[in-house]
Length: 639
Image (cartoon, rainbow, N blue to C red):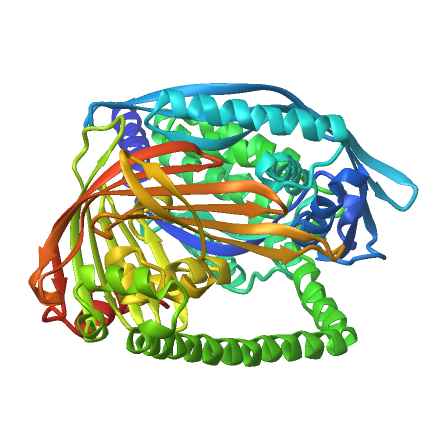
């Protein structure tokens, strides 16, 4: 009897030992899935339209909202007849106050200041499908618009005060057309928040999910054969899953019943930990994919209770609780994105005429640019020819005697005509900062390049008919080159007139200057020349455009100062004054003299700026060529 009991005990021990020796392998499968919103009624809805009720003072913002906002993920934007209708009621943002903030840069040991205007915003959003209201929400809150940054607290305060006045005037007149007010920026920020919310609530998106199964590899284990059959079936099905087709529950049913029976056959005990972990993990993952929420949660909780790698069970529970299940399990795999593609193609076919018109517009713009480029290049060449003709015929020009003396003081007309290239290296001292700043400029008859170190790089370049800039301070180290507007090109292209580049003498405007009464300027008696350029308004009224002033020393015929005031719709928008306080001889101009020290005074919407330029090196016809414009700046920059 004792021998029989001993034999039974050994068999049980051997059985437990066999179960303990079970080994397994983990397989990862990557399957496409759709992330769904909480509204199953939208599963077969493919188009959406946004409707706006917005103050008439924000008409331009309304146009931009229609173009650039409320593209809900998984829907096609239909301008008029979308099945999902989004109604947005925008109240005009209410201005509250101007606020100035300060930031201290430890590395540079300096303060920087910024001003921002604060607004209260309110937008009501309603989303409907047919007659059913899906959601409604009020988007209240505050937004701000940063309008200036600088190192001078005084300058920022002045700019903030001016901006505050502009906003209050705009509010009083209900006229927000000035983009500098920041109203448009505030509207778009609010729209961004709403679009993120709508995508979260309504959007459908595709992603790739990772699913982990555990399979028995112990061939001597009594369950190996049937477990291998489940492995083969689930592996084959996981490889066939698409957005339209999920798991085949009929083929999996016998395998699932078998796995569930194992939990009865192997009750909770220390010896059965491994086999129960494998079974509960596979049951939880499979039922989750079949969208059977109750069973997925039940087996995930058993997996946690099994007390082996319980984080796996918690992860499945989290997935089940986060996903939106529908009444019909096929919701996880439908033809939504296939249908969207078909619908998109159909809508494109309906808009073929508009598409062709768009490309015709692009072609016309390219043709217009070629004409504009040709005109600009011709203007540069004409400017050079006119300058040479003027220098050859000084006695026949307006105020010829004065012009002759000014030109002779600069080195003579023949020397100025021979200037083909110029290079200036300067040191800048800006009021209110001790940061060393340098400026290096090159120019030829067709190209101009300004390179600053302040301490970040800044470039401005004219290359024939085009103008570009690149600013590390504004757009980051990896920023691309930005093509400048026609207005900015006009301002920069004056620098390819090398006489103006070296001396600020505008020979192209000389015959437009009117001689005014002599004037004491900086303690010197000066000739005073003025050219007031005007233009016509849409109402055929003459309005100021640019006002130029030149002051020339009556004793030595140096240019003492130049002033330029620009107007926008008749209102002063920019003022620049240059005071030439020192001239030095230059061998390259037959001992003629060019400015060495220049004091600048600038006033624009940012406030006032004062700085001094000391020209440390001025070279005429130096040894440089296309390398400057093609390799250092141009190469790879304008892509």
